[in-house]
Length: 233
Ligand SMILES: *Cc1c(COP(=O)(O)O)cnc(C)c1O
Image (cartoon, rainbow, N blue to C red; front, side, top):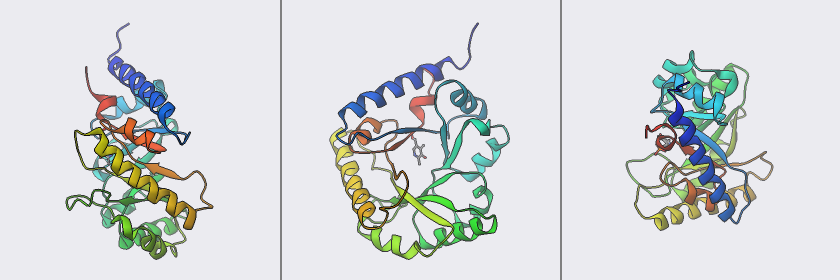
């Protein structure tokens, strides 16, 4: 019987195998979650991936796209994350739909998440996004601001920081990627020791299709992979 989604099987198999190889090279022995970044995928593809290929975490980076796909998703088969930059006025649309917001980079945004989470009686897990390449075009706080930022949002009782996220600058040099990921790992360890020592299963979200093996060897616990899972080949 022909299977229209066979390419997803093949892609997932390859990505899982690359993750396993990278874990062998990691000195940290960490568990790694594969999150499927779903901006290139329709609901049917996402459902196929989560029902058949061993992926249980997906991430949308646009609120509108998440809302459009939401009703069609097999939600009991997946944890839905929000991974893109988030406008304050859209928090209310996703607060009851996602398990983790990866991209918190302002006190105002954290404050709004706190308010919306309180309203529905939940505590929202978040990651602090760090702009490790100091790129003007990108969101995220500057690396040296991390500790201060954590202090500033620590009063929000309906927000729980689970770790950090970064988007490394695009490059063709694998060594460049490793440098940015290693820097991010150091910040992660530093704040775990100082601020987040009692956090359950801390998350270090870094690495995409062209960089996830490097991210894993530098300590990532979650990689966000889009095109490598959904491309037709
Ligand atoms: C699209 C996206 C990814 C995945 O990118 P690929 O290069 O397709 O793997 C990861 N993180 C975020 C925030 C994204 O928007």
